[in-house]
Length: 124
Image (cartoon, rainbow, N blue to C red; front, side):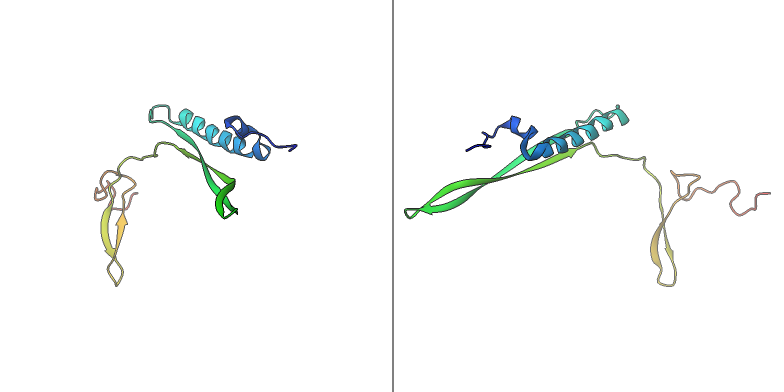
């Protein structure tokens, strides 16, 4: 049974040449960067390692037994949702079909219908 090892949490660092640990490190690095980018957002950044195991069955003397277990890992991370300011969009219809569309005023993002100083006049 050379090469066999007892599986434990510590095994995640070595199994599959460290691939699981490397993926976890990438997620951790991204969560740390998000903390640096948005230090005022105090919501938690989460890293999850989920292990799924399923029995591999066989029949011995007419009895179903678990011969082995297949396992897979799922690594997930969540960071707080990035939110923008609220922008005002006007609703207009365009074209022959009166297709509804959204419009906005880049000079007044909080009021799509806000007229600007030069509306209707040519700036000279």
